[in-house]
Length: 385
Image (cartoon, rainbow, N blue to C red; front, side, top):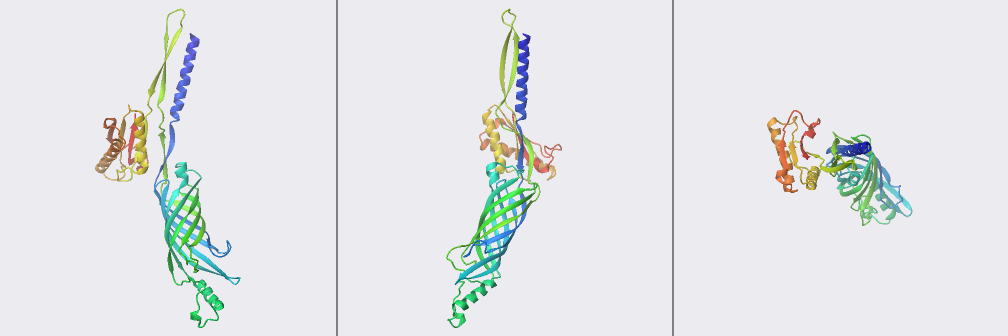
């Protein structure tokens, strides 16, 4: 009988240790993305596509820009790219080169492939993505091309008099300032130095209407840029918080020992398994002075609804808060109530959660706020249990 008791005690200890480890494993670090502005500066080289071997039309290139990241995947930027482009022509085995200047403002849509396919983790070392956009190429200082064109006219059509009657060899020759549509696309790779500073590489392809290089070819003109530079983000780009993972119900094992006073039978053991649903907590954050649920935060509301569907005996308490550092007490009390009510309404109307399973509370700007960071107190906290 003592041996049986020892065995039961050991079994109970193992079960308790397993349950404790399982409970600890439910907590994980969650990264919360914060929309932010950034600036970037880059330098590099350009290769203009032309009638010569690669590298013959290389020139210096630079770019500055400002951008905004809406979420972990999508962003937009305005960049000003420019410096020098080159052209070349070979007639009778004699090659002539020229260069001109330009500036090209473009608006690009940025897509972060690393976050799209690998999940949001701002502390990973490398991130990569693609971009594409449109803009204008404003070219100027084309005097070298005009000198080449005049020299080729004189040598190629010397028999034609007067000189003004000689046709242009560069049949799309231009002077002054010339603005053209430009389309741009490419790829980038960023190396995270700090949470706000990145070192980046970028490859661009740019396409323009025929005539950018003063020649007529009947097809589009191209130039390609390779750039390296830094990107600096303003303010807080992300925060961390602990959360419990949504998981299957944790079981609690209760062991009951019963002694039967008969000579043959010593102990009868009975194991009772009771299902205990682990509470689920989700924080739905709002922008300052608003109570609209953003697309990023809507996924948390959907997760609460899925969890309640799996566990039909649970109820959710939705408690709204407001940042006490912003607005008056009356405004914050109303705003916190609106935040809690919009989450409750979304659970009912969009996800079909019964009204009697939802408890709505509002705390306004209570002194003991849930978070130390003011922006995080613009929140509706959902606790399912």
